Length: 290
Length: 228
Image (cartoon, rainbow over all chains, first blue to last red; front, top):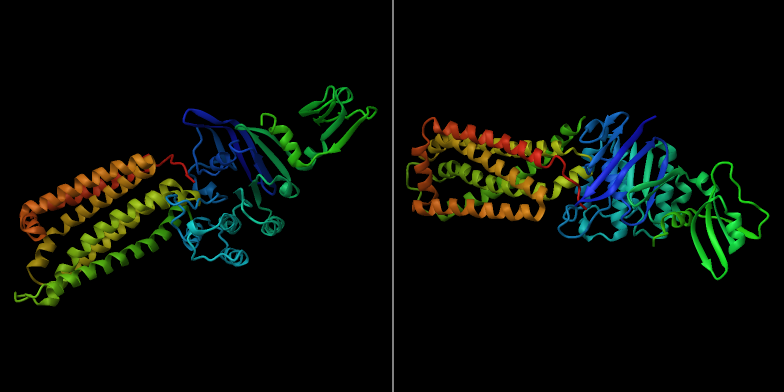
């Protein structure tokens, strides 16, 4: 089983540390969801894991081999990053055809037929300049590259940004089909958490340059509950439990509790206990300073 | 197949494209030169003169293509290559191989034509060929260095390279203008100055500059970040 391991990854931009000693281990055969607020460091982390940007400190290895500038390790990785259509950016002057031709050159397992099929399915015109594409079309091109690269570890940054709901559904279906068929590892960074939650086997939450949590999505959802009711009852029920994101409405109160193994919420209080969605859990964990 | 080989595969295609551009533009230039010149009463006829002159146009066009394409590569393609899994070193080696390939083909065409066609123009071409090769390698070295500086330092790098180009271009233009006999006069003067071993020293200097530029480009881009 292949592993991509990052140890004590740090990154400093203009004197400001944006990643703080991150340790992360990614195993093959999983779909990971990478979620975090804007500026949390998701894209920087993905860029560093795939040697697109250097670290300030720490190491990244693929099956024990350093990833940085190492063709042998890079052959297993693909980070299909967001395309920038703004004039003057590196990709804007290119046609889709040329972009895909470069991708086909550098990804050793490039699936030309898959790329052609997806281009047809997404109704993309390969002669179009990247600068002329809509936000949704730009996302489609990144999806084509990610899927057709056939890289063992594939990273996607906001792949559904700008896609309409039909195309988003199509993407998730494609992702699951490809995963089932090949067992490739996917790391998907997204802000549209609710839709994607079902396909994430594990969720990695990044907050302010740190990994806040890396856990099986189902396990996480089974230990996070929303407790609400009269303030005193809620406080008594949640005493001794890990609490996040307290909300007050008059004398009522709501709080997310995160249970540790062996913990339970006492049932004899006059409180309401509800399951939480991944988005709500994320908001509770990362939205406190908002 | 490792990334360096894949780089080369991509670049061989790009090299061919750049060569086609160079050959076509130079053919147009020589056509205009020949059609604009009515007096071919010398010992060589119109065909011989055109064939003997063609490599000079090819060399001039080649130098311009090398300069523009190589610097543009660092500005645009370099980041795309890295974002699509090329190593930085592999990308620099690719552009070096491609530029070197263009120079090699240009020089080979010159050598073949100047050996096939008799006359004074061809003779000067044959004499100056090592010098021309050295000069083209120096142009390639300048293009690689300036491109890498642009990629590494962005707008500041562009300003530096534009200023440098202005100084170099101005100096060259002034030299030609001061010669009063135009490029032809300059070539004749160069033939007299570089008839001996000096030609090969220039060739060697060009080759050394080219390799040094490659090492310089690899060094300053070794930690280059992919920008959006």
